[in-house]
Length: 159
Figure (tube, rainbow, N blue to C red):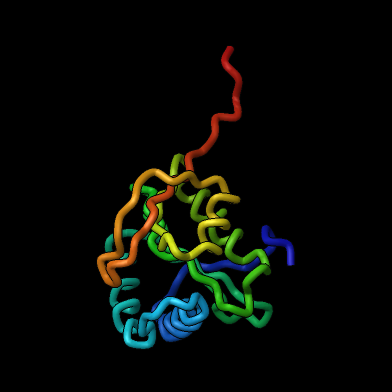
C-alpha cells in the first residue's frame, strides 16, 4: 500500500486496549530485556496524559480498519513521544505515513528520543531526515537514548 494512501484517524478512548497490545508486541520484538507487558498500564496512563495536555494521537489503520499503529505529536513543542506500528506492519510504509503526519502537524521541527541500541529505529529516523542532537537516558529503563531532531528545510531560494 502506498504510504500516502494509508488511512489514519484521531485517537478515541476505545482504541486504548488495541494500542497497548500493539505497543507491547512491537517492543517485545526489539529484544530489549524489559517486561513490556508490565508497562501496558503505564502506556495507557501516558497516552491519556499526552492527550489531556494537548498532544495529538493519530491512529494508523490496517486494511480491515483496525488500529495498526499510532504516533503522538505535540504541535506546539514538536515533541514526538511515541511512534509505534504492529510487527506485521513493519516495512509496509505505515511508520513513514505516521511520521509524515507528525511532521505535517509540527511543520517547523520534530524532536524525539530513541534507544541507542535500537538500530532499526536509528536507521529509520536517519533515513527520514532526523539528526542526532544529544545523548540522554530513559527515565523508565535507564538505557542510553539519543535525542534526534528533524527540521523543515527551506525550499525557497534567496531573492
